[in-house]
Image (cartoon, rainbow, N blue to C red):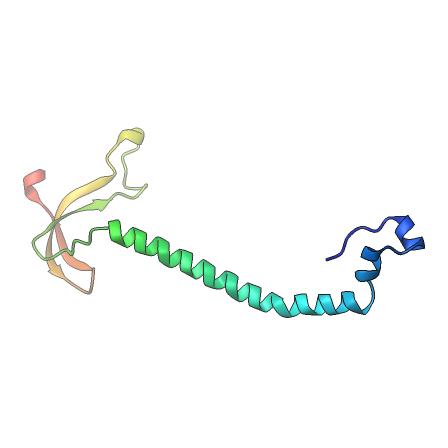
Length: 118
């Protein structure tokens, strides 16, 4: 720890000034440098623990509902697909679409718009 030294202490060294100067200060600085990696590692461990805690909290509240062939889904509209005359109160979703075939995990093919809602 270093502090500001007033000129009186430079002329007549006080106990604080004599303890913070010389080899004792060098040893203290080297010890702080050695502890930097450990402190950085501990901060990283805390950061990862906080992220895991937030993930557990989210996953506890999220309800997973796997989709399958025959389900109806809504598709999000992109900004370019929205009608500019509707303004901000226009629909954000397009559909419903019926899933007719599954491709990969979480991906679907041949999604067709349901005629019952047209």
